[in-house]
Length: 150
Image (tube, rainbow, N blue to C red; front, side, top):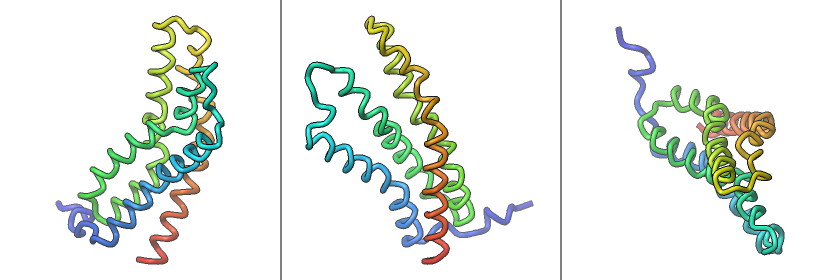
């Protein structure tokens, strides 16, 4: 028996472009905001090297980059139903991408001997509710705009 979702054609070029834009704009926005803050001089003091490394982790820049690359690759072969389902699951699927750089930083801090940074291995858990709330707001806006334009 063939599933109805498998019979649907893949996304058109315009639909795929819309989903790619929705996928990549958070990374571009975070890079713009963090670049502006760094340009202003925040988080750039040389007396504390840990702030330099923690700043991209708080913003989730490594996680957003990895997540966007992974989702871009998988979005190309989706149909409309699968793409919309992928949008709704994206905030949950992003959590491991956000967590792994934190855990690696925390574990490397333990190995190097900076015990004060070891909390970073589990500190990301406090951010998860904000990731989910922000992620579902973005997902809702994405689906609403998709419904309006397509």
